[in-house]
Length: 270
Ligand SMILES: [Zn+2]
Image (spheres, rainbow, N blue to C red):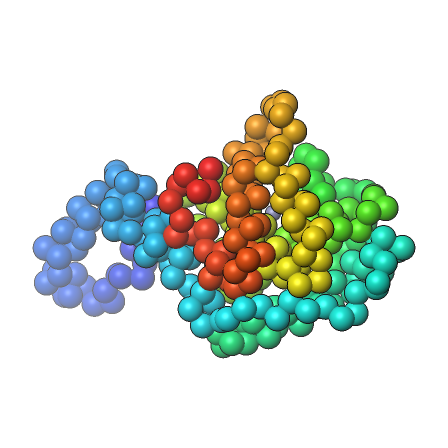
């Protein structure tokens, strides 16, 4: 907020005009100063802050202009656990198709992630190597989806893949651009993450409904113990109960609109 960047776009070109416009410019400076001073409160008041039903992220055309996501995935192997990598690759293909179709309805061109990395160790990821304990990560700069493959059971990794794909969709659609003036805000992060959980559930609801339900139950119960790492995770990703609730919405609603965390009141994205 403030600084030369805010001014550049409004700078009149002719010096004479500056004199004529001086009173207006001064008034504008006062408004800008007020904005800088009040920050989030004023954005809240104006309804443009994340979390307001009128914010840009909450009124994105994806919510209005797309219907239920066609989440069928005929290429998935019958036994998902026989070879987890085969299942993950098949799902990635389906997710590309689902999201291309869905975004097309809103007139948005979908480009698949630059790369889907199924990796054995975090060091092989395109970003986030120093971050703690992730099962998957999306790198917005390089648009690479990374999923750690270290389990025989395919489904938890499939959910992770669908969640990271949702981050890719937030990126290509511009939903993730709505960062406001803050560099990093945990409430913003929770809305982003819970939306990704919800969209992941929407995309898996037809292929694996029962496994999705048990994962929801597992997320909702939580581990019961919370150390520092888990507390940090909850701050940035939301509680297990919130996650389970948004997964339920995605599974039952099946639309992007059912996953509009950006317009939800704060207590639903805690
Ligand atoms: Zn995430």
